[in-house]
Length: 305
Image (cartoon, rainbow, N blue to C red):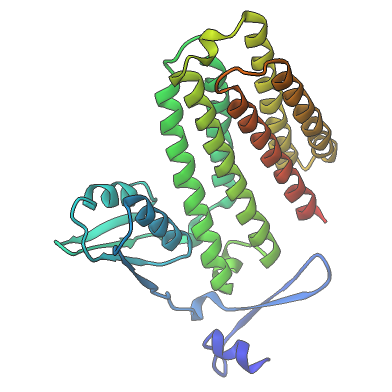
């Protein structure tokens, strides 16, 4: 065994190893689960010259990157509420200590019991509901608050999934217990990122529909055409997720064709309705959702190769 690999995994004479045969015929050697101790990782985040938004990004990054203990220190006056809110939005992250110059939080979670497939299916169901509720905004605004809350839940699930996969990357025994290869971890990490991005764009789209005068000011024919564009983008998202879950190559290939058609239709719609306030942003969001859907289709193809 390579000495560097032996030292990295804290192996000694007599330790047991697991050997898995991969699809390409290679053998994957993994340290025994019983031999690995929990790796406590701690990070300190300085608040100096950082806004609450900066700190929130740092907290999410530390969480996703597998840190168990997150310390926020420095001048936190006026920022504690925002920090506390961010901590509460992350799965299994609990605040342990709050002082005038320090907030400490710890993640209480054993990721080895996590089902990434279950997480992806849950995120998919929430996102599909968000798309349906965004369509309903053409008739009523009462679903917007629900869409915002669902986006928070997508973030929670996606970030926890990303954290789990990061830990699996750092720990071969965790990857073994999750029954994931190195390549599966990489592709699933990308998939979760794309799903989280789609939900964010759907929320932004819903905000324009609910909080501006765009839909009210459009003629019925134009509204119907815009609704049709949203239907097509939503349908393609449904195609790609079904292709993932059902391993359906025909549906995967259909995603690429439909994406091209969606982009052409959206640009033609925008060209026909020049000068309408907020419409360019709506088309940009629809294009981006469609592009992210195509990205997922490429991930599905790569995972099967």
